[in-house]
Length: 235
Image (cartoon, rainbow, N blue to C red; front, top):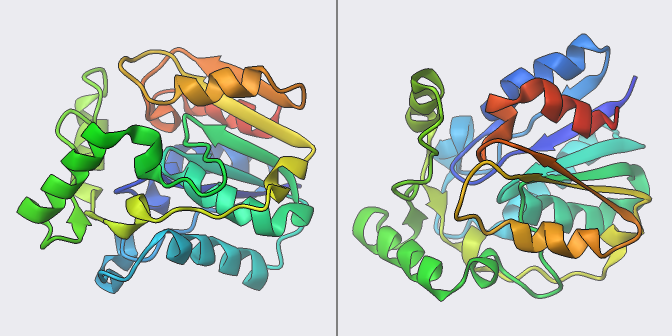
C-alpha cells in the first residue's frame, strides 16, 4: 500500500481527482486529495491575503496531521507551484514527485513569471473587472473544446475564482525538491498553445528526471484517468 497526495490546479478542488483517486484506491492505496484555502468546499475561507504560501501550508498540514511518510506527491497545473514548495521543505518524506502538465518553477519565480506579461495582464484585468481586484476568474477558452459536455459542466459549475496572490507571489526555493530520487514530468500533447512544453523540455535534459507524454488536453485526469493513474504509480 502506497500513500498518494494529489494536489489540484487553479480554480479547482480535491473533487477534480475523483476518477484517478478511485483507480488508486481500487489498487489498495491510500489517497489524499486536499482542497486549498478559498477554493471548492473551502471557498468561504477566501480572503485577499490568501497566497501561494497559504496553499503550500494547506498541503504541508495534511502531511503533518495524516502522518504521511514515503508518499507520492502529485501536482496538476497550478498545483505544480504548490508541490514544488511542499517538496522543497518535505523532500525527505517523499518517495516520488509527479508533475502533471504542471508549472515547474525555479527559485524566486511566481506563476505570473512563467506565463508572461500578456497572461499576467489578463489576470489583473479579470480580477479588476470581476473579482473586486483580488479574485481571478477562469479565463475564457481555458477549457479545451474536446472536453465532453458532462466534464465541461462539472468543471464550470465547481469552478471558484482564484485569489490573485497565489499567481503573483514568488516562490523561494532551496532546491531540496530536486533531491527526491524519483521525479516525473507528464506533458499533455493534445492541445496548443500550451505553456507547459518548456518544463518538459528542461526535464528531458536532466538525467534524473523521467519525461512522459499523454495525447490529450490539459485536464488529463478527466480524459485519460487510467493512464494518468499508471503514470502516477510508475507502472
